[in-house]
Length: 304
Length: 284
Image (cartoon, rainbow over all chains, first blue to last red; front, side):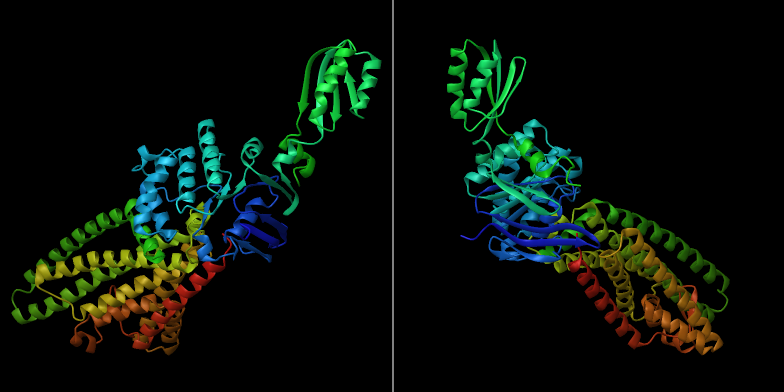
């Protein structure tokens, strides 16, 4: 099975301004792939190149094994644009029907799919309302329905939850989980790292239009862990003994921070402290969060 | 068929945004005013010339023709404005608002989007002309039983002119903003309009430099030439022979050739092709 997305040195230069320096990326079929980076890192331009909105200056890419712009492949791709601006004089029902026709779906399939999707995004009661009467969140949901109408093999979601309230976000997260269970590849561009942390299998960090690192989210939560200990009666001797587990022990009153190789060391540390007559109140492993990793890779300069 | 889907969408947009309704209501108001004016002039001339029956008949047919063409002159202008106004914002507006993004990412050629829109507008203009030309001609027929000669070729030329202006506007809209498109189109219209006058005065005064200047302006945009040809077609042969073909307020002395009609058709095709090409290559 070919890669869902495969780009090689994809580059875009607007006049003098390099928007994407050289994007090389591989997304496996069936994975939920997060695309992260600061504002102006070239995320939107990259997505636009993949979807044929913007012509690359150089480089090459395939979607679902077909070169960019292939219409057969496009019939199997869904896209929710970032600003989800649609023809708002259409009703929700008409909007989905028109887009179904544009996907090249048969009349019978459009008739069957439109109610299904209205149901999925919980807009069935509003099916005959014009989109101009919709709230931002409702527009985003109808946009999502539009992106899933053709039962796509690959979906691009550009900031799919930015306009949504917590209920809407949960809905989108559930939809993503469902799609993933059915083997749909999802390319997710989002600023909400907590969102990405929950939904994605892998993430790419990009800066200045280049991939800085691709990480599996599972490996983010294993490995070296920072541990915070809150304890009373810590003696210098007891602190010195902690160096058996960590080279980096920092004490600040009743609070001690140390870095251990593995979470598995925590029970032993606790037993050791108790044996030293230290009163332990808390022993908390601090996972490196996606946000920490983001700042570590991209830097605090915002990539500027 | 994506072209048909886009054409229907274009038509539906005009309907939903009340463009069609506004054009229809104002069109009806125009026709009512025209009918009133027509009947007034008709009664006046009939009353003043009741003495000589033959003279009255001659005058009546001349007057009917003049009044019908005056009405069509106004309709022609309204159709041009309509063609330019509805198409100026269609691509430029969808690009700047971003609605175009969910269209061009579908398995659709960009050319199909431009051609679909063109087809939708062509349908709108046809509908508009049927109403307005039909209305003007109905007035002349109801009051005087008058029908201009060569209705089909005359109306076809008016339709061609409206299509030409709409096509050039659509093509500009693929590259320029809505306002810039409007500026270009009305600038071109101004050239064609004043060029037409220069040509007619040149023909009256037998000044070949002025005639050539008029022809050059028709080459820049042949819209006005199409109207003058349409008006000439719809003038009775006797008046044509006497050089009494009125295109609205102007006497048409120098009649645009058949070649100019062919040029206009080619112009339209090239403008449409350039618009399609520009839109296909554009970053959105």
